[in-house]
Image (cartoon, rainbow, N blue to C red; front, side):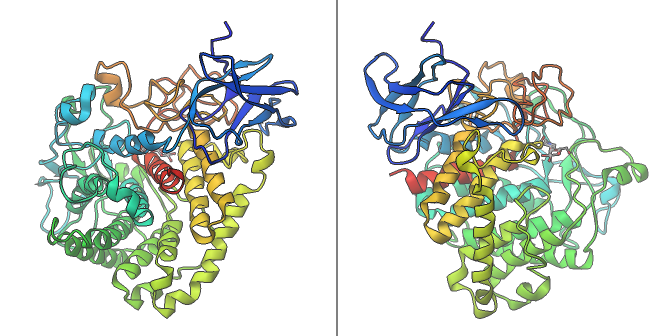
Length: 563
Ligand code: 9MR
């Protein structure tokens, strides 16, 4: 019937700000008009003409853009294209992404291990505590002074990494850095944002309360004897599709590594300055973080090239460990990030000159294995107050951020989705949603430097992508959108007996690698290789490092466009 929404209109299924761009993508449509009206009415609120057609770089698909930016009247609407059909409903209103912004942070609360999720905060997703992690074995690869074979440590708390129940320092690193940066860039916004978590009534912003849950776990992952940091806390092999409290396999901390030490150092250095102003509520925390950061940095200087190579580890030690590897082999970017954060927090020149901070003019988009830009973003955040030794480099660094943002934006206006995401096939990797989100964060950095609204608009394009204007037609954020992901590869969401997945979690998104070999994919195309099936850890898992740039992107957009 005319009321059944068509899959051929792709738009942000949550909605649009009154005073910002509003676009929908119409697939394989003839030239012609489109209209917008309330869902239950035929009274036209806006009428426009579809754009020239555009071709997908990945297939024969063509699209036309329906631009209704000029419609500023708040309300509930649908978009109708004669011959194509009617879109999913959407809203135009102020703060239209406020609920999604909160949920994306609250998603971390649902990932908390070692504490029960109370009904008061978790609603129908309440559950018993997961692994206490108070008896974690020193894996033979991790044996050291004062921690001989057969001994255990206590390493409770933290967030589950993803759909699995392990805790990985490298992936916590970029996650925490991104969340702390969201706070540092938009503090007024986060002062006021409340999440209904157990700490909501203390005098610390809820975002920082949530981050603290993982920070305290990270602190336990440092060996007090030498300052080194264990790569991960893990089972030997993945759990089945069971609830956290049913997951009782032996837990290990494994080998220390350079990436873990440096990511840890960067996070602790940043956390030290962020929590410093909450000294009254959290006495001693900031100092403890800084000491931990400096000790981890010291370890890394002595061990500058210790890769975590799971294959090598398994040839040497028992038991074999076959969970997520996060096995980075290059540490120049981790050294840059840690040096930047330590320098900003301490203002000690030794950190600024310790490593070559600007080895070349490349600006690689952040990912768990590539953290150089986290350091650059932080330097630019403090550009005006840095001492001369650093300040002299800030103009050049700012220009590089703008050049990166311009390169990302180029071609967006004629792209078949009109997004920053998806100009290249290489955008569609494992966790492609985080590529879109990190591109959004990158262009928001350019906006912060220039206040040029084209960068803010570009960020919004990628949020639209994540919430429905993409090659699949799904909103990738659980709990949001008419056609939202319902079956993420996420053990609690699978095992809890609740129909709806835990809300506020970002699905990985299209990944033509299809490494999970699920049989329910319906496309091989880069932008469509996705299946909303819980077998699909390669396209439909959730992960803390994917949610973090989403938190930054939605929070930043709400902070800048919400009012
Ligand atoms: O996000 C990671 C991706 O970049 C890798 O290609 C992939 C395979 O090594 O692993 C992803 O991380 C997973 C981790 O190893 C274990 N927890 C779930 C993570 C998301 O799928």
